[in-house]
Image (cartoon, rainbow, N blue to C red; front, side, top):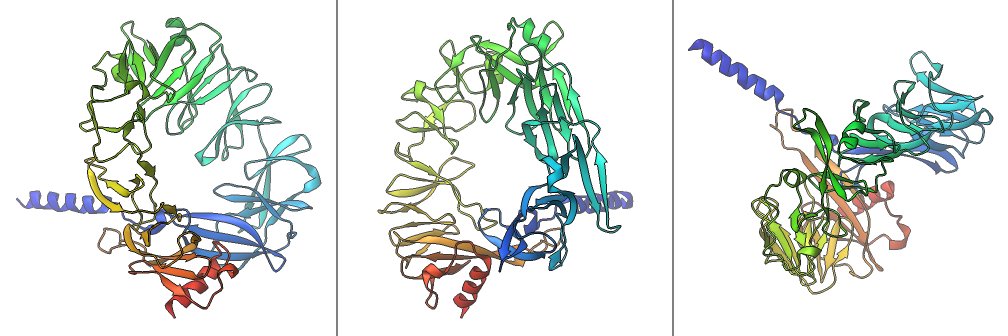
Length: 502
């Protein structure tokens, strides 16, 4: 019994240890910009909320020993590449609490013919990588082992990964490796590089003679040439289109087939595995997300390949016009439809009329607005899980998008609640927003609630208004002339917050 209790306590401890902590800063991102303050260059660093507008923090760091015309050429996770009229500089992308930085000169501008990423310079006929050790105060200049003289980017990915070409080869390049690798067997003059998946991992590379499925995450290629030929696809392979829906990807080689991409592979009777499998079919319509196979309509490529039951469109008024919308509902021009049970049988969404427009919500941390529909008379919100109508808000005027809020009639929809709007709706606009981090993390195991509050500032032709999370109405800021405030000026927004609290 004691052993069982010990094991249970151990499992509970492990479970608690594995439970992910939650912090606001996991969801923010930093932006970097060079600005002139009283004629001198400063690096402006802004911490942005997930909504892309609200600013959690901003500071400006003085930049020494660079010209006032200094520009940021590129940035990666470690470095910034800067340039002024005289030279190129390297600047570390991470900063502690300093009020000034000195970018490190790495080359005279006259000696540099080209740049790539944030640390490669083409000088005297060769590419060099530069790095700076801030502790040893030492610049390291390293010649790349292999890199195209005149690289053309075919595709760019996270973690500084690239697919490149020049007039000789196709290359893969990872910024931390200081060398490119040649992808053999492909002619750069005729290369096509097409994204296969909704994420960025798999690409179809073909020069007409050879075809690879290339996995960028691990820089590995799979030769599918013989597989394509075994299905009687003729050379030269020419990709007319890669189409994707939420489930699958499809390749059109303009051969009368639609080729289904199966990322896990399809085992065939001859013992081979196909990753692109042809089906004699055509697109249902111009959207290229539904496939018509002998009058049967499919959305799922796996069902199409295996002759599974097609979609049930008996309730759809105009099947040939059926499209899937950004909301996830289907639409045929006369009505919206939903796949309630996920089995492909569509039924009308009776609480939406055909004039309803999908409106993107606000993606603020904790205090956003979900996506909704506007039919001109009411805003309609649905339940993402049940696809049922959740609530409505009646309105008569046109809906005005204020980026972080929506105005209509004499109301404002902000932080997913309706409040009175004392501003002039026609001239009203968003000036900007800041974030108050009351409690940034949950303590590691959720024992402390994360608390984030927002400040919003609007203006109309006459006044400036503020709103703080939880308020019941806008606050009129009387002492500021509207046209004197710049949009998204962090310091001015901070001053407006002080005046809002006066």
